Length: 321
Image: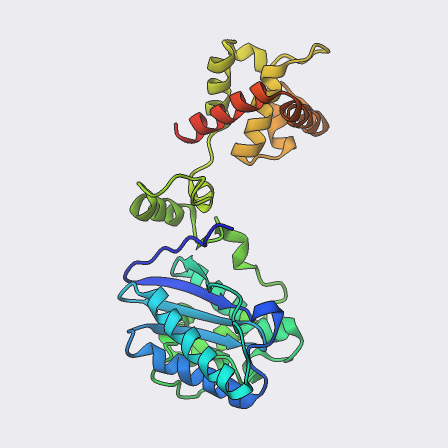
């Protein structure tokens, strides 16, 4: 299994999560919960990590962190190792407490950070262990909604600052934000399992930190962080490869059109467009026709190694163009 793509730089924001090994609990009682939060607080200052939110469930934990020094891995390694040593000692537990490496998603500041904060704080409600997010004792939510003094290691101003100029207004607005009937899921905007943000942010990350990295086959997430090719680019490359004209891709008839089927297949696989969206680009084919064309190529590739090799070469050429 490929290791998760980890992008670290000074000033980055992250959603960090880790589950118990074999889906087992990472806390069993309030003493464990208090100790985990104690380790979280003790991580913040020496590693210069800003904690913008947290939610400790029985399994897993969720953190919203900012790293002014770009040292996420070292900080979380200390947290996980320290807490696991305590847990194993107290419960005479042998083996790994956590399920592999922690998962970290790089997050764009602003509305994405706010949406992530809501997602993290609503975990107890989704899990059915609380009816009100700010009544759950083991998350930071109450410090965002109630007039409580937050611990000195917990930073609430950055997120609340997006909800009003005065703290009273901001807290009220944030509570309303949490209570929206159908909140959006910020993870719908995660690309490559590693980055949450706008297209501009994705492009910035790709250009600033991923250019010159290992090839896609070594870090598969890089492929998803690349901009999707346009259908026009795919058609142009397929036309060159098969030495046909652009008219070939617009012709609808009974005769099998391998070139058009290949272009349709690559447009769906690489371009990410739906059958309905692709139909108009290929002479008005129906969505069902697009699906049948893709299925024909998929079957042909399983039987014809030469065709499969040619299509793989086309894929690499298109993605690198």
